[in-house]
Length: 254
Image (cartoon, rainbow, N blue to C red; front, side, top):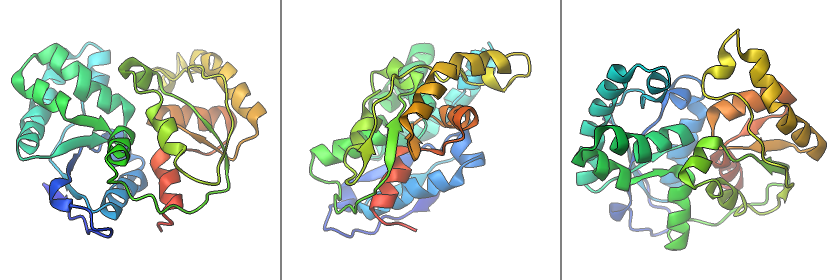
């Protein structure tokens, strides 16, 4: 396990706040800055972070009917993560799709005690930070961030009933001007929008959302889904970031 030790900065009981970070393929291979930001924010709040050995959550394999590969990845991840949970860790991820798999797909397809245990202790990172806020354990010494932003709720967050958690975290940041947009699907559909034969269809599906964002004249779009980020940036040219990245600005992290 790779380990990052939290350094208490506010008198928080760090021995009671321990997190196993499920990084996910996108943050690991395409956006390591997001992974670093997550760890820094948790450290800012005095939380111990471990990064266990892990494989892809398996959602891409499941989407293409490669159920044997999905089950193989799931069993590996559950063995590691269930051990961490038994040792008192929560499991967090900054990817909405990974969160869906940990909380919904693993217990549905595997139906094991390990799967149930991990699902009960797994959170998308915005959920986890809001839980800390509700328990008055989240550092809220935040500086103003004078940006005009719009929030896009991912389809996989809607499937979990967590479409508002990213928005609620964004609203903790002072100084923002948040613009409401009509929240439509971006069209990327996992890897659907990456394929040559479906790229044009994908962009057509997202066109209504792209026009909404362009009309809003925002500085940033905020979303918790990494593929939504790619699609929105391609469709609008507007930088699209995770709520964590906005929170890090308010913490004035480098």
